[in-house]
Length: 375
Ligand SMILES: Nc1nc2c(ncn2[C@@H]2O[C@H](COP(=O)(O)OP(=O)(O)OP(=O)(O)O)[C@@H](O)[C@H]2O)c(=O)[nH]1
Image 1 (cartoon, rainbow, N blue to C red):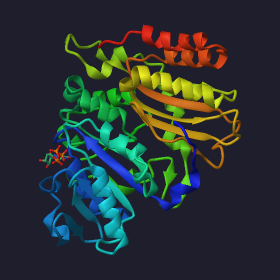
Image 2: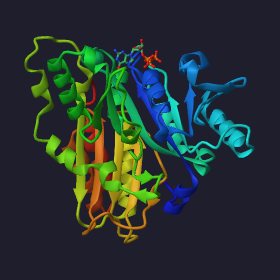
Image 3: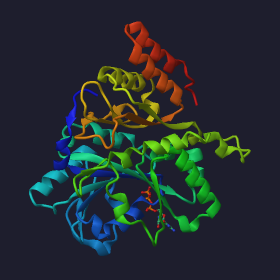
Image 4: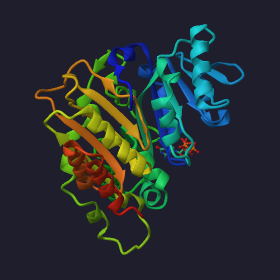
């Protein structure tokens, strides 16, 4: 996390939304629903394989080699080469009038894949960040098989942990008790992500999936409060995660059992150097287990808030925002981790804040190294 980004660059960039979710959890079905709605016209959709898009052929207006233009001006295209290449190519085609001027991009990830590499590219690639920004992550969770998938596939846990919105699909097929249990587990796993219920016939309202990041491109407004939802992490801390498993005798590995979500708060301004060192130690020693980090920090160097976000070992360049959402200013950094406890992360920040010598700073790293790691 080196240079600070100025916020005003955002208004000139195109928002990117990632739709992820386990194999067969309903990503394509959801996208098909969304593309039919006027609120999501002027959207470009990128999928991994052309055949997979399954866009309703009745919607298709024109097709070239790897791009389909849909009624209403949406564009669907396949990843040829890598994601970066595809996005740049789409942007060029948009500028030269080969395809309609889209206002946002949806990227559908493959069901079995870890969504982190896609998110890393979107957060960090400098060429891409000149034209686009990551506006949010939407994760589909199968209401019928979601509980089982959370138990058995760490990818499902990661996909849910990285989400800004969770869309529970196939709700009409699921039993109300298991749906409730799934919602509870997802709430524990990712307390800030709003859960939307969906089914093949109903879908979800496009408006509920727009404006899910801190910057709303539609009206160029900022809403860090709803993006961060720091309060939901505080409430979440009251319920021990393991309580959700008491009713079962099963000894299977339950991947989400090791997920922790919490918010670190400081009312006093922090040194940017200290914050940087804190993130660097966390990333260097446990980057793999930092599933999602989002925060607004109050530093000694500027009266303005600085926004930080990262997924595992990749952080976006920190961005200075024009004003605090509320007074007095306070640093709030939310974490979703695998097997890293709040008190460790909290203690590390305290140690680094009061350290004077390199030996003292090492103490913070030693605490993290000393905590249980294996799962
Ligand atoms: N009843 C019902 N079926 C659904 C729903 N969503 C998806 N399906 C069905 O589930 C199957 C998989 O849906 P897709 O939308 O292809 O899922 P996907 O996540 O895109 O699948 P992959 O790309 O293979 O990972 C299809 O047969 C859909 O018709 C839903 O909400 N309700």
